[in-house]
Length: 152
Image (cartoon, rainbow, N blue to C red; front, side, top):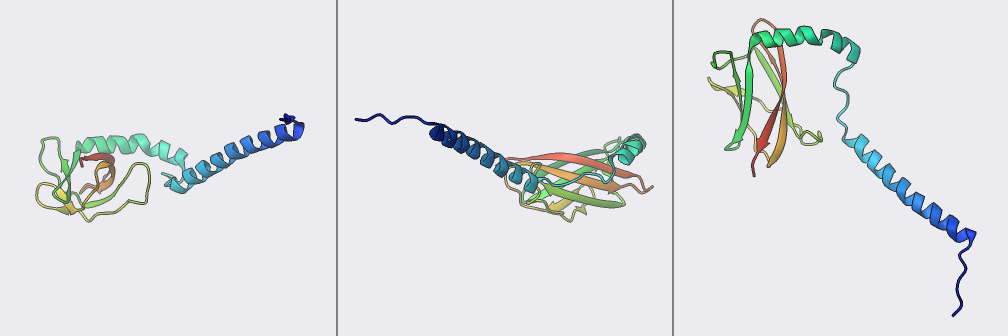
């Protein structure tokens, strides 16, 4: 049997092939990351940072506590005041979705039932986020991300 000689062409082909695979995988992963990125949180981060402490103090002055759970095909969002009494807000909007992607995001219509906000939503098991924006009667904006764990 004749032995084949390992030439410079073989080394170049091996080198180009190996790096071709690495570069291809990196391009696929970069494309996937860009496609699943939900976008910017704020238009101008400097302006948002200048207003952050003021908004935080106003929000903390409300003393609200937010809690969420999913059961029986419903998402229940409870907002309570410092005394533990339910709060009915002037305006409420919420986006419910996964933390890692936006394709499952929905904006449920929450209705105040006298003790909490309820929306009919059937969720799959796993971790969900509720990005809540509520407005108090005095116009103070209350924003919070509420983590919701749904058991399977």
